[in-house]
Image 1: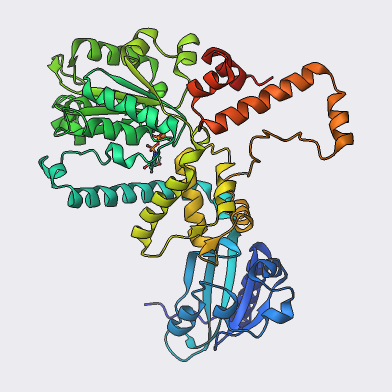
Image 2 (image 1 turned 60 degrees about the horizontal axis):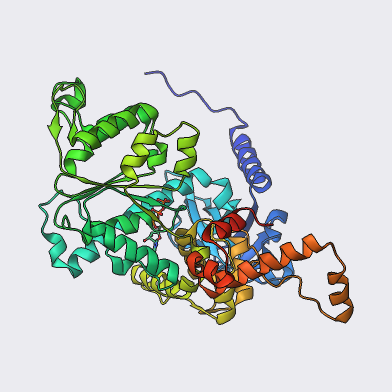
Length: 507
Ligand SMILES: Nc1ncnc2c1ncn2[C@@H]1O[C@H](COP(=O)(O)OP(=O)(O)OP(=O)(O)O)[C@@H](O)[C@H]1O
């Protein structure tokens, strides 16, 4: 065996230089860095880190230096690194300064052991990224999706424990998770949609749920199934947008044994067949590729499917509930969605109202979502003061209930106190980038402050004044009726069509 070659004389100098360069490299490319000594006392912060100090409650570095790390950085795990001597190479840290991707590395004395590491003499804390919600968006979306699946699984388990009737399906079959009671809301718009959905549950025709993302379409689909004669059958859902076009046909109709080689040799059961005797929920139906639209139409008309590679028609018995957040009639007009399929699905259309049309439900939703979160985390949900609730009610809520839930989760994570007022809420929403705060609809925005201003407002073009009055009247009536458009149009003495037109094209 060749004898080991002697190390160059400057090897240890190179090693020392490498350590120093790494330290400087991290200090310059990271968002911030600090050092603690063996007792956990902050002994140094770099320039980058200093910009986090105000959010942590310090106006100068001098106030920060010399303090114990857990006293000044809430939720830090630095103590664990000092005690175990083991690094935490990547972690998410959330505290009142925000959410950060951080790294914590112990510093060892030189030692005699095989690894050359002696006692821990301190540690380095590195903020790799701040605002991970934007910098790490792809990772976070994936994490959020996994978290949602986990939440769903937990909710399903809890529902099964609470309602033994839902356990009747053999193992491996899917059940509905929600009932109409799960759809929180007593505003006229919410009551209206639940009334129509209950009626749809009594029928066996296809249902089409239309509404923005996060308005509760999937929840309603579950509830319709649970209230229908098929409640004891499976509830099978398929998110069309989430499956690559090339795999959709197999997902829908299944694959006959022997059609493919390899893993799929044995064949695969499609969702239509899995939903036999129950309900098939087709989410994001507007994203259906054109080729498959024709096949879906045929299946719905004939009540039969043809698994890939089989040449045999197999009857199925599933009730279809479809949903989309897209403007399906517009897709039909543009030739991107088959008109005949649209009419086939649109037998019982249900428009699920966005949250901003049922602002009156926000306090009840906050309570129910907060309780649900508390059940999972074991911590009491934050209590929102009236001005904070009013601020929530004024949001646009592009992501509807899902977005509201997200805001509440951020509140629970980031707030220092149990009672949240509007100022705190506004800060946390802004910091967490959850939603750009939009002011309440300016129903009374142009109310004059004094006589002179009142006079000036009157001396503007009449068309402008009339248009403004119209906007204010519609906003006030929508607010008074909790967003119920029929009631609003009656109150204002205009037709529903005129109201829709004014809402879509404000004067
Ligand atoms: N009225 C409601 N009461 C309580 N929770 C609700 C209500 N509506 C929706 N949610 C909750 O909000 C979240 C989003 O709802 P859901 O998935 O049903 O919306 P969706 O309209 O199907 O959204 P997408 O179009 O993005 O799939 C879910 O966690 C759901 O439980």
